[in-house]
Picture 1: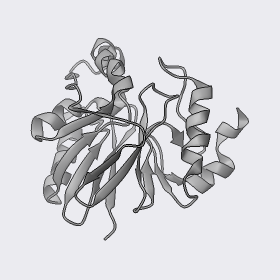
Picture 2 (picture 1 turned 30 degrees about the vertical axis):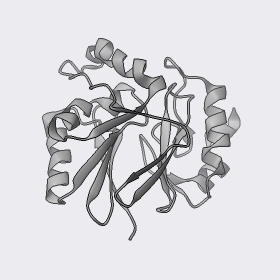
Picture 3 (picture 1 turned 90 degrees about the horizontal axis):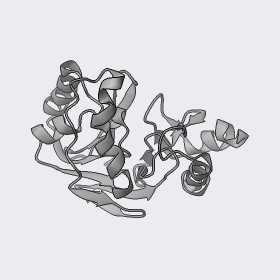
Length: 215
């Protein structure tokens, strides 16, 4: 039975947060950007109304828009939080600058329970994931590849027609290009890419039309 995925658009950055679940309602929470009470309730209500059973909290990376809901999720669910170790300092720095973006009520994210590594295999229920380390937008950026389901949750590596910014700490265009060409573009063309911002796309479309080819 195929997996299901649902996206929410949260916070002022219009960040895409994702729930992925299997036929037995085992559920992954990826990049929860819910900040306001309304956003938090939207996510919580969806989980409860669909009788989902959260198994883990996963972050592709730790920029503020992707971790605003981490503390809320950990408070409501007794689940492990996963992040790549190279993004730990990025995570810790959010508290110092959150107010600059208007997030005065930011509740600091707990530290990860487990660290992600390149080529790591994760299994939750019938959900099988391969983790790829894809730096360039953030030092510890990773993507979550659901090979059997034919999709990847790629955070801010690729967008439809574009790619993640490289002008933040840890950003580097050459490193990002390597992540895109050596990892993302090696996946099957039919692979659906669920992005951290904007609509989904496919590997095949981005190999043909993405702006990264201009660099």
